[in-house]
Amino acid sequence: MVTGIRRPLLVALLLSAAAAPRAEQAAVVFDSSKATPVESVPLQPTRFTLRERLSIGSIKTFHWNGGKGATPGSIALQSRDKRLFGPWEAEGLRDAQGVENAYWEVKPDLLLEPGTYTILDSDPVTWSRNRERGNIGIARVLGQQETAVVESETPTSAAVTVLTPEQQQQRADELFEQIRQADNFDYAQIESLYLELLRDCPDSEQAEESYFRLSNLYRLGMDPPELGKLRDLLEAYLARYPDSDLAAEMRERLRRVYEETGQWSAALEIYEHLIPDLTSENPYYLVILLDYARVLEGSGARERALAVYQQVAQSAAGDTLGRYDMNELWLRAAQERIAIIDLHQQERWPELVVAYRKQFDNMGFAEMPQIQELLEYAQALEQSGDRAEAIKRYRQVLRTDQRYQTRQAQQASVRLENLVGSAAFE
Image (cartoon, one colour):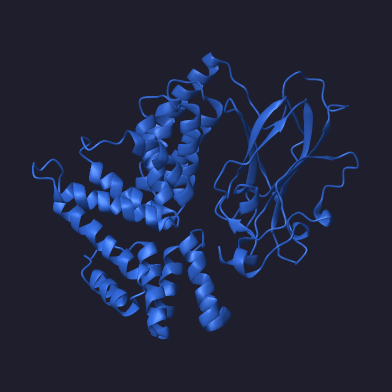
């Protein structure tokens, strides 16, 4: 994210004392702020663990969002057994620089038992994260011990309803019938019903299927696809059903989401488990290897990517039995990337410009260049002295990733600022 590079923010700006809750006995339960630049979209779950029974008085998340803040939404908590607490509507607070709604705060007054809880923010796209804290969301949780809170032995909140297994099944049946009768194009209502089912009926027969159906809605029903919601949903599914029959399909969907949103490290983690078991007998062997190489390039591991491209080229060229569909296409794709990487290594910038121009000109109507390729083309143009065209291509990188979440967009933003200054972002 460009703001993380252009304007470092210290802890005092992230969660300032001026915006802290006024409760005199409040103690910090969890605080993930750190003196570091910030970026958006947490890449890992934001969790805290309670060792004793505790009353949660305040939860605050930070939404720098390029210095624009973000319209307050809601914050919730989820336990290890997938019970949902909240969500609570957040109040927007100003930061030390005067940015409105830079902080979101809720005051749930919620008694929690010992355990691990995940903070859920309704707008993860603008929720800030810090690399030095493992790319979890920036948040602060304040609480106090049980003294004079409530006498109940279970967590209590007006927003929390715990149903018995029988009640869950009955409610799930009702919600499925409402979904069946809903207008097929009323996506907001359908989404709301599925989310209610997942929240209130996690142990019902319909819960697992609801994850699958809702993932289809986010991917195919929404225009553009709700990739942020889809990612959160798939991660929650795999945490709850890691060994289910659908787990492989849902993990594949999550991998695609990571790739499409440029979350290379998360995508790479999936590949590191997938590749060791991948054999040449798999009919998608070449395709998976090509995708793996692209993720390696996206994460900056070009040498490893080159080795995988060479493996694809060797396998595709030797495929005399026609074991793989379109092996000639995969061979050409691998050879093109090998040639591009070779030109980069030798810093033959004019030839690289010609190669990319030819590649982009030959793309079909519906094809889109990869963000890594766009960045490399812009870099080659800049190194060749074509400043004006390089600026256009760097801007194209930023249009491809408008929230500057990827390494490529961050690099493009730096080059643009060096070439034309802050006007590059207007």
